[in-house]
Length: 436
Ligand SMILES: Cc1cc2nc3c(=O)[nH]c(=O)nc-3n(C[C@H](O)[C@H](O)[C@H](O)COP(=O)(O)OP(=O)(O)OC[C@H]3O[C@@H](n4cnc5c(N)ncnc54)[C@H](O)[C@@H]3O)c2cc1C
Picture 1 (cartoon, rainbow, N blue to C red):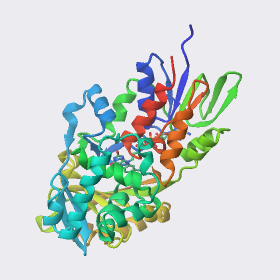
Picture 2 (picture 1 turned 90 degrees about the horizontal axis):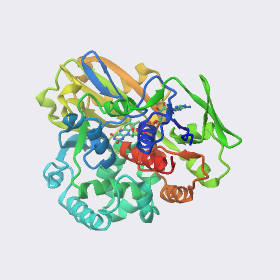
Picture 3 (picture 1 turned 90 degrees about the vertical axis):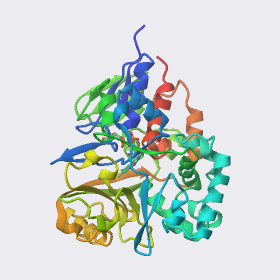
Picture 4 (picture 1 turned 60 degrees about the vertical axis):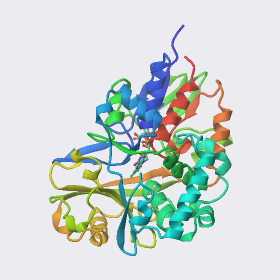
């Protein structure tokens, strides 16, 4: 019998995991990628002795699918913990805490006793109810997808905890506001604590994982898909280079792009494809010098800036606290803009962006401007799918509706948790729906 022809569109982590899984199922797919490299938003590059994660910044020890792939790609020796120290700005000062020592939220001065008690007791109660839910499948959180994070957190933890912990966390990780984000996502992120998750990275950059997965696959770079149509019983995939035929397609591009590529008659798909995204800009700042001990950020890997304290920066990372290989000498910073600033500034000139963020950074790292070796700006129009109320239900309905008759199956982080592991889970799910 002729083997099934499957095309995967998009070589981000969702598409690559889908294709890799298909191979395990006895199908040899072709992966079509518009750009000249694989990884999508999980991508690293190097320049002049500095190693930059242009999109995704961190992995987690609780990323079960990615951890397994890291093992399969023989990358375990490069899969390392980052520092545990996080900083949050309050009253203009960076207050530090170790995420593996909750007491440090109090001793580091971020929270007062009342706030700390509320956070600890509230989290323990939450963990009791949610610790069995999967951290990589958003649709499993459906029963909590009924209220905004802001409403819930103000009531559950109190307003000041929302302002100084929950809001900056959502902006730092997802570039999204609590009033536009379902509490299901905030609760899922909080649940990483119940699992004692550690923040991880890959020596050589997180982009190393998609690169190695792709080596096992037939990936056609610089092949942008224009549209998919049905001719008889086959799909015709029209691209910038040539046309392809397939029995099935896994469409693993961000929702707004997938919407342009294929027209679905089904409302479930169309609702999902209307998912909106937050935007951000990741600004890399390579510094000639190490940070002075006077800056008092030694070992801190990330600083969150709450709305009340920020101009445009939602978070910045200090990359050598992630791993020493990020800067051979000096220091490397990654600055992320809030979703609101990302929307406004996405088309702004590089010089204007750099000027604005350096003046904000000077508050926390005095004289940073004098030490700049070079800067790079990575613009992410589709940074993260927004988790507005109802997204869990839409995903759940779609997943339940899939049958053998569906020729085009969707994948990508907008069908799951809005991070690398969530995207990988959607790829796995999509592939498992195609039988050899
Ligand atoms: C700044 C930033 C920081 C982040 N930080 C983290 C983090 O610390 N930890 C974490 O886990 N996650 C993080 N994320 C989220 C994570 O990067 C994404 O959730 C994940 O990488 C999405 O993978 P994906 O495969 O769904 O989509 P993508 O990575 O976007 O892949 C889609 C692919 O499709 C290709 N494509 C587009 N159009 C076409 C076309 N017409 N034809 C063919 N191919 C096409 C694209 O070029 C791309 O390669 C971050 C994201 C950003 C932007």
